[in-house]
Image (cartoon, rainbow, N blue to C red; front, side, top):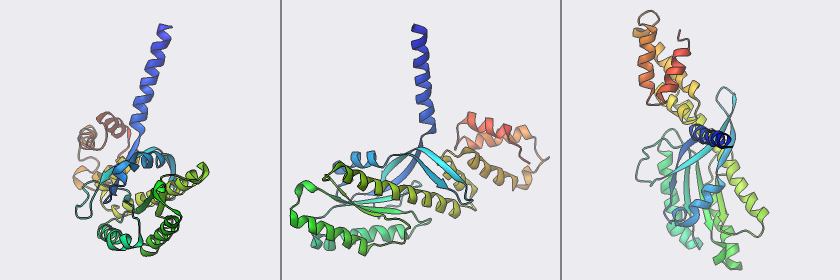
Length: 274
């Protein structure tokens, strides 16, 4: 029994290590000028936008499955340039009246979107309007419906799916809640795939940045292929000009910025370079 328990424990530990290794963590930026996200909505939102797996069709029309995707939310402001590569942007808002929307909320949304449009490659964005249903009357219900429609009218962008949503703190039925979040996650997966492809197209002439995107997606062979193209394009390392073992050692050292040393060496040493 002791031996069996130890075996089960070791298997469990190995599974945890494997799960941690295969988790795909993608950075997304968020702007929270009204403390909606940070003020208690964050845990609920992150729980509902988890992505166990989703299909991504790359620019060559190859269909891939990305599993165990985790979104890493990084706070951003319109005046500060994002330091990390982000795949989606979120702005969280809340307001009580059309007047407040026009005077305060709309200018901030416009400023935020103008900042996004000034950067390349373009990153798909979401506007999340949070409604606290515990603090509304029948009149408020009509007002909030008008508000979300007004936001969509003011900031309608040519995304292939919806990107502006109203999320309520409470729903009349569990089905209403499930359907509301299902709409958000469906759009999120679609625009995340669009964002990935947009980055790969934009960085096509930059193998280092392309490799970084593939590394984020745990597509290691694609990432290493970027290095193959990069180094094969340099005359000084053409076939016969340098010992293959020396070349592999050099590349494995360089690639440790992107991969584990063991993975880099095992992959590089088993590939045909020429």
